[in-house]
Amino acid sequence: MSNPKHTRPKGTQDFVPPRAEQKSKVEDVFRHLAERFGFQEIVIPTFEYTDVFVKSSGTGSDIVTKEMYTFKDRADRSLTLRPEGTGGVVRAVLENRLRIPCRLYYLGPYFRYGRPQKGRFREFFQLGVEALGEASPLVDAETILFGDEFFRELGISDCITRLNSIGCRNCRPAYQHKLVEFLSSHKDRLCSECQLRLKHNPLRVFDCKQEQCQAVLKDAPKPGDYLCPECSRHFKAVQASLDKQGLRYELNGRLVRGLDYYNRTTFEFVSSKLGAQDSIGGGGRYDYLVEDFGGPQTPAIGLAIGLERTMLAMGEKEQARRRLAFVVWMGDAELDEAQKVLARLRAQGIPAQMDYDAHRMKHQFKSADAAGASCCVIIGADELAKGVYSLKDLTTGRQIQVPVSELIGTVQKLIRAQSVATRR
Image 1 (cartoon, helix red, strand yellow):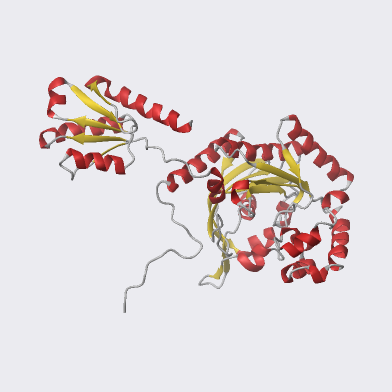
Image 2 (cartoon, rainbow, N blue to C red; image 1 turned 180 degrees about the vertical axis):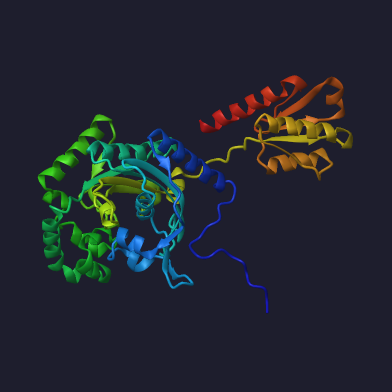
């Protein structure tokens, strides 16, 4: 019997260099921006009791009915790998008795069983923020501005913001009645899944991508036409704040998002680089979820961003050289000095590396190139006799001699200049 072929499970991915570095960059930008907006990091378990996600996502949502990785532990308890972040965050806030209002951010892997496609995986990475205890429409606008600024910092210039309001528990029943009435009259034109949604969760019909359903929905009543005065005022205030701060957006009356806990403001960010599945992030208000979990009445709003889809929207870019100095040594006589230089570079915060196995300089230069180094510090007998080192810029090929005392500063300046050139 032949050995099995070792491959990763369907719907998972390996982040190998340079994609792993791009992933880290996206996470770093998100982390720093979140902290500038006053959010603090929260780390929640990778799996929860299944009821957490049934309660947060809704029994009729696609996540609960089709996509969750649920299993029993040895004590016959039902556990689920987290398919989204908000439910776990709300559970953690209540269980740990965090003081509200609070602003929290998170990042990490999430899991949904679906059909893998471009930018969509069964194990995927999500970045999110949650503002609990803040009811003002200005907070809605600020959350949307946070997402827009995040994508702009990553150079995603074609990002478009879509905006809607789906009302509250006071005005949505009247709208839902009209929607069911309309969809029921066109039931034979809906796909089989939407016919089930019509019975259990009619708003989810708006999430369907089937052409036949989209054709029906063109004439369907929209949530915005049934807003109560309070929801209408809230939504107008959100728009006014965005207008005041110069953020361009599109009103989309069919934007309901895919989770049951949303109310009032819903929004998403899309990029034309992703084709039909163009969403790279989104969110909305969930003013009832904390209460549904047994907590006090607590207004809240959140945003979740798909890391992989964000990376796709960033596009393929020429791989920059790493912030790395590679020490090259001529022969055994220079090896000790090369190791001292390696230690000096690292002590000053400069990433540095050597090839201990390659005794020929030609092979060491190949190793430096394979490592993506920015420069080589060359140590030979002539250099030691003169009290200098040779420094080669691996981007331009230019080589200069640098006094021993000036090495650290010169390497730092070279790497900094390469970083600036790459950002341009």
